[in-house]
Length: 479
Image (cartoon, rainbow, N blue to C red; front, top):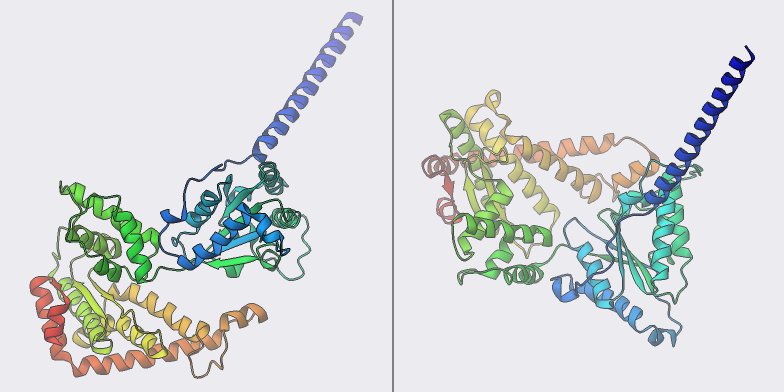
């Protein structure tokens, strides 16, 4: 009996020792895992220069001054000028914010620590803040360097007024970033560059002087910038002599640098597909149409009724576009279905010289409505189709901007309703009524125009039914 008790005691002690060992081992493993999680992957250098980035001339000038600050600090210390602690690059996606940050580090010849804002968004308490501290610690050890945080809105969004949630992980991470930026010595030569598509969502504490001192908008390229970007990407390709840079620059109005790069790449793939040794103008035209409208389907309209409806729909768009905005260049009107789900499409380029006015926005709304109006007039209200779905979405978005963002409605009293709603936390019922009133008025106007020009719509439709594609010269002859 006594021996059994001894064995039991020894077994219990052994089990307890094993449990303690497992706890210790797991704790050590967990600590090691946390230490590993605190480390994030980042680029450590950049060989890119500003000559490798076309366009954005004004942004380059501003960033070149930062390069000079980093390279020649003594020049600025004579007048007791301090280097900006942070540079915020903002603008629409694809305009080259990341490329600009890389070029800044490459021109300055300093280490480049590139991370994404999402790298700091973690479920573990304190991990995001720990990663921020580790990143800045490494950058400071390097001396002069550039820290680049892409998509900073992932960690830098506005905190609500009177936010007292000190334990919130997002606040912890943001506070760590603010503290690290405030702790920079002015002569360290380390600068933080961040990029965002939504500067309006960032916390005021990030945007104040002493944090992101310099805020640079990276805009969509104008025609000259587009020419430079096209030239840069084509310089790396085998190109035929028939390519006109001016023509491509006109085609790509509202294209970002990334979209232009994609256009040139798609043109290259088309040339390879056709076993062509050079990229020619036809390849670029085809790639342009595929990017905007999708690849044309081989099996054309098998349903004749659908083909007729689509022809009238696109004839309505094309006619109103030329009738109201004759300076617009219509590249192509097609009733051939595409891989992007369009039964047909009308592609036009706006007059680049024209300012976006109240009148022009109304005309754009009219063009968007014209396809559905043509269906209604020629087939009756009960026979309209779902073909106007995308037109309705775009028209609604534009009409809301007209009322709430641009303050162009007679009853808007110079008010941005988006700001009003955010500040007062009220529903925008008045905007809804104004949008409805605006769209009904324009829709009725389009109905009257198309009713008065039914013969011309029929003429355009006949050619579409026969050729399936119409170009600008055909439209100019008919209208």
